[in-house]
Length: 379
Ligand SMILES: [Zn+2]
Image (cartoon, rainbow, N blue to C red):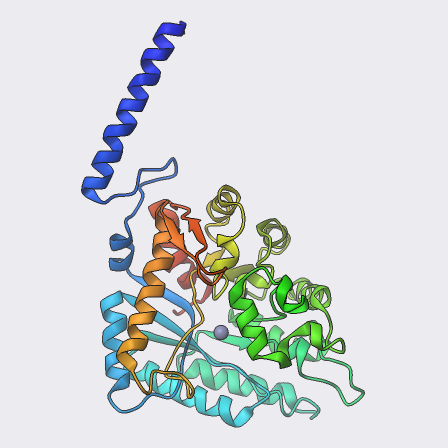
């Protein structure tokens, strides 16, 4: 191509790009990307979506109806995750209420059960856990949660922490694998948990760990450290290659998509949810994160860790304000995932913005809906 014709075609490209930008602005559409049609925030909000990691607490009279109407308006289905085997009384209540809500509104509220850990030292521990899990699935549960209390709280009488790859957990994991049941695994914490507050990479973690010093790993050298938590989880995945595992919170490898990609390559039985860790993607190099999400589009589930109706939550005082905040989170997440706009990410730090990754429509549909249905059979 001659220099002149190259210049002419360059001008044509610039003009074309200009008119495309105008057209995009007029129709409020994000540009078409190489991997498929882009979607607007509006289109994302209208399509069927699953929040694959959320928590519904105790709801006052009338609040459940208001909440379900909200889910209908946002076109979301919630996977309500029960959690906390170290407090069996509270977990039992959660299980009962999650099951009831699912029964009343199956189209909008799914649920994940969990199991008791307070009886860990008893011989029939695993039998009891399996029977809680069986009951849960009979009541419509689609997954089983294991929480960070394995690895960070539960101890044997000799003072040693029980880790995720402990052989005494095998009877539970093996029974689940045999029946095609999925484990929702929140194991370990973000790497920031083992750093001083002022070294943490995002404001959200700084806020959480200053409010929950009991989980701030740096303050508790007796708790196995970050590398030990991740290594135990990895060995658990190895021990149970046929058990489907969804690693909550980007599998606690939120700080680097390359580290996460290595695990996804090594363990085909692993997927991850984005719950409460989108901000960690927003602070990493944008094009690398986008390439990661496109490459692993079958292994990432949208989830938020949002709560509605927990005891201390403002929902009791002002449910409408709480629902408005949930809606704002959903819209901001959709803007970042679907468009290439600069999106405010105050959870990183005040005033911080991150350019959206503009994922193609087919990828968005997987992350927001299809992957959750695939990784949680029955959802
Ligand atoms: Zn959670």
